[in-house]
Image (cartoon, rainbow, N blue to C red):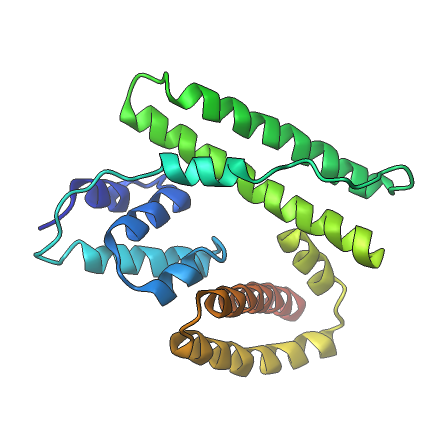
Length: 227
């Protein structure tokens, strides 16, 4: 039977990726696809998610369930945000990342405290999804801070870094990448299907998502160069 919450998501022109991913996690049973969906939220991921939910909604043996989001929120907020990292000699970029990370973590904590008193399930779900977005940023920010602390490398957060690198490529380098990336993406997709270990699945899915995002940017730049 069709599930009302899935149908509502599919028919919503402003549908949230995180909401859809939680629906798939609640009703789907494909662990490999779930690992991929957790690795990013690009147009590729959105397309995969929409197709998966459309297929799920056609199954006759599904029964309505409530999205279990409280445990997920508790899990991410139980990870301590404060670490013994000295910022005395930190460059401005790292300080900017730290400050925004702290702000968004505080917003996540505020949402966590307010969710329990919101008037409806819909409002609680929306607040929970917003909270998870904040925590995704916090995790990415910690990755950049750890990278600077361990390697002295100052990097942008994941997507901005890729955009900057692609913007600096020459035309010849763009052409070369447009040829090299597709076979590597194909190999990663095969490896992801064959992987059984969840950690390995996540690692491959993350690399696959980064390569697909980079290929999209390379193609976009090539199209602009040829105009």
